[in-house]
Image (tube, rainbow, N blue to C red; front, side, top):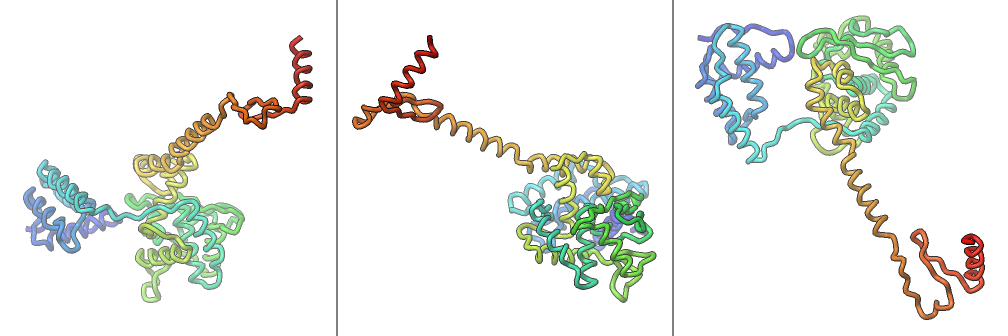
Length: 355
């Protein structure tokens, strides 16, 4: 018999709630046993199933089931070896069938410049100013779309201090704890702090969400779907191409570029509101090291050195017949030719030097 599903408040648990609902709608009951979980994995993850769940999504669902059972002091049906073997087998089938993890990519520093250049000229309408602010905050904060959409005026500090960085005390995604994030003041054409102050002043905002929903849902934040559409349109207009580009792209861009500039994992985690440095080290720092290009540049340097060695000419010079009246010798990788008078002068100078 199904027990009531408790309502959670944080974003992760909202996903868990949806996973529990899907499990129940599949015709299964709670509390569940290991066989229920295995059949759920095989059914929902079937390779030929339309709208199937990938292994990454199934792991979230298993996490939801585990939490539900442990919270209710029931035995965890997801931790058995058989469940892990099913997931491992399904992951192998995904690889064999070319089903890759569908994830957003980061954008490079050069692509960021294209985006920033576009944002700097987006000043004609209120929507344009809103969209550039959404993009700028997403870029420098590295926050999830839901965190950007959830920013409230009450979260903002230094708002009345001109020519200063702005601090946003944003609720973290998973823990709901307040974590400060810096929105930089540059005083230049690209200045997120100035744009934020200007947007609030023009909108006459004193409280509530920074980015409000539609007229019908004005008391609610802008939906993550709308925010995603905004960012996608920016990418398109800026000429960014290739790979999956979404509002989550900035979640990967900030830590990647920061790591390439030598920023410590703790600083990156604090800015992006990651709960620990482990995620930053695992997913961004290690990859950023490769993006610095030290290995391929070293290969090119090595080849260049070899080229220099191979380019040194042989010091044995075979003289053409018509050059027999010239004194020719190799020096410092080059060929030097002297006529009779020049050779005689050199000879006298060498005699004086050697004596």
